[in-house]
Every structure is written in C-alpha cells, then in structure tokens.
Amino acid sequence: MHFITIMGLLWLVSIGVFWGVMKYKPRTLWSGFSFFWMLVFSGLLVVTIGFQYSDWIVRHQALFMALSVLLGVVVLGLLFFPFAVILTFFVQGIRILFKEGFRWSNFLSLAFAFGLLVYVVAFPLAFSGASSPAGVLVYGAVGMAVTYLLSVLTIFCFSAMLNLIHWKKRHDLDAIIVLGAGILQEKVTPLLASRIDLGIKLLYENPHAVLILSGGQGEGETISESEAMYAYCVERGVDPNRMRQESNSRNTEQNLAFSYALLDDPKANIAIVTTRYHVFRALALARRAGVDCVGYGSKTKWYFTLNALLREFVGYLALTWRSHLRMLAVLEIPFLLVFLMAGLFN
Image 1 (cartoon, rainbow, N blue to C red):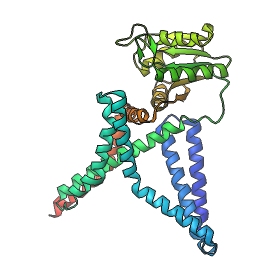
Image 2 (cartoon, rainbow, N blue to C red):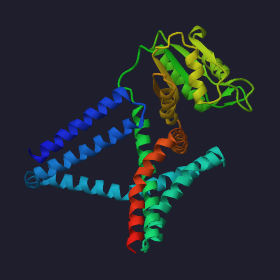
Image 3 (cartoon, helix red, strand yellow):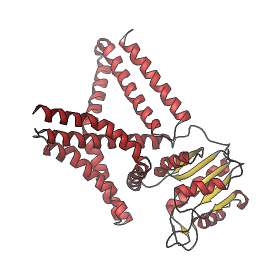
Image 4 (cartoon, rainbow, N blue to C red):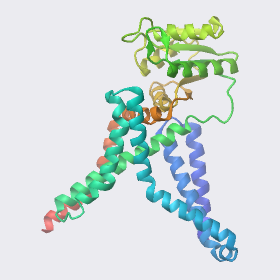
C-alpha cells in the first residue's frame, strides 16, 4: 500500500472520529482534541501529496512558486506564533485595564502574556547550561507542565469555538435559557442586553419555545437580574406569556438547575444563551448536571473576550482539576525516572 494511501485513510479516519465526537460528545474537550488531530492529518496529507507529485509541481513553475511562498508563510507563522500571541495578549491586556478598570480579574491577559514570555525566552536561558540531574529534572518537569497546560488551553479554545457553530437554524426548541449577568441597579448592561437580544431572536425563530430569564439579585442591585431582563423584553414587545423568570440563582450552576426545574418536559429541546466566551463552560456544567442542550453565544468586545476566556479556562480547570492532575502525573513520570537513574549511575 502506498504511503499516500495510508495517509489518506488516516485522514478519513480523523474526519470520522471528529464527526462522531461532534455528534455524541460535543460538550467535552474531545471535540477540540479530535478537531486538532483532523487538522494535523489534513496537513500531513497535503505534505504527502506534495512530495508524491513533487516532480510534476516543479515542472509547473507558477504552482511551484505559489506553494513555496505558502510554505514559507506557514513556517514563519509557526516560528513567530508564540510572540504574536504574547503581543496580542499584552496589548489587549492594557486595553482592558484602561477600559474596564484595574480589578484583579482584568490582569489575566497581562499575566498570561508575561508568563508566556518568561517560558519562551527567560526559562530556556536560565536552564541552558544545566548539567546536573536536578537541573534537568526541574527543566523537564516545568516544561512538561507548561506545555500540557498550553495544549489543554488550545484544545479548550477549539472546543469553545466548535460549540458556537450551528450549521442550520433550529425551529424545534422548547426552551431558551438566557443566563443573567450583572446589572446596574435596575438597568441591563450592554453585555447582558446582547444575550437577551439573541434569546429574543431565537424565541421568534422557535414558535413553540418559552424564554427563561435566569438571574438572582446580586450585591448593589435593587432588583433581580431576571426582573431587569423581563422588563427589557417587555419594552421590545415580547409576549409575557412566552416568558418565565428564575430569580434565585447566584451562579451558572444554579442558573441551569433552577431554570431546568421550571420546565414541564424533562426531555425538552433546550438552548442556553450566554456570552460567547462563557458558552463552553456553561455546556460543560449542564452536561455534569445531566441537562441535554445546545449553546448560543452573543458577541462582546475582543479585548474583553480574551481576558474572559482565560477566566473561563481557569474555571474549567477548577471543575476538572483531578483528571488533569492525574494526566500530568503520568506525563511527568519519565522525567522522574531519568532523574532517579542518573542518581544511581553517578
């Protein structure tokens, strides 16, 4: 069997696995993981085809030049990608501080950019001359841990992106749950308004659905978030008979649990509406609670999204830290064995 045939089969298998995961387990990191490997096998197939027909490509000078330029762009992109990420998070981190205030949560983008810079530049320089087993162990262990976390973050972002994609409009939804966010006393914020507007849009596209507005009363708020959301909907002509309020929740888990309890049919087709960066974690929480649903994300500002996505990732790790800690321990074992063997032979 030719190598190109083998790569073609592996590529088809990767597509099949990705399709299966998106059909049966889209609300897990397996969605991003299978998507990543589908991309890898797609790239390998393209490279294999290029080598297989290299003589033919060389004879067609225009095509050869175009592919050479494309290859150069890809290589340069891969080389400078870490620095582009650092610069992006640094610039957007500065922006969010000036636009949203100097709260601790708004420093995540800057902290991530600084930490990545240390890992990419300072960390290798500090251990470049390490020759002792202890130095090698520290360098390998820390490097593996950071690489693992960055890989999980990448897969998390892929999974979050994939769960925002809907290939066709839904017209069979029974319930649309809009998750609340902070309000200004009685006024809906622009971020929350974008969620409600998307919920209203879905409500009009699903004639048999009800709109569940979910959110309790937080500190500094004179009414519950659901009351403010309800008033916002009434002002925009939404039929009150198609709306329900859930006013007791204080976090996303309670949003989902209390809203689900308002439904008459436990097998209802449910959509969760929240901001784009929050959709995947909300779906993961719903999956843990046994609630079958899909997610829709409303738009928000780019600089805010990056910082919030990091916050969501930290929140996701808090939910799944045991499994990731076990996986990291398995990956770190080789470095521990090298360290022990080096100590025995010295």
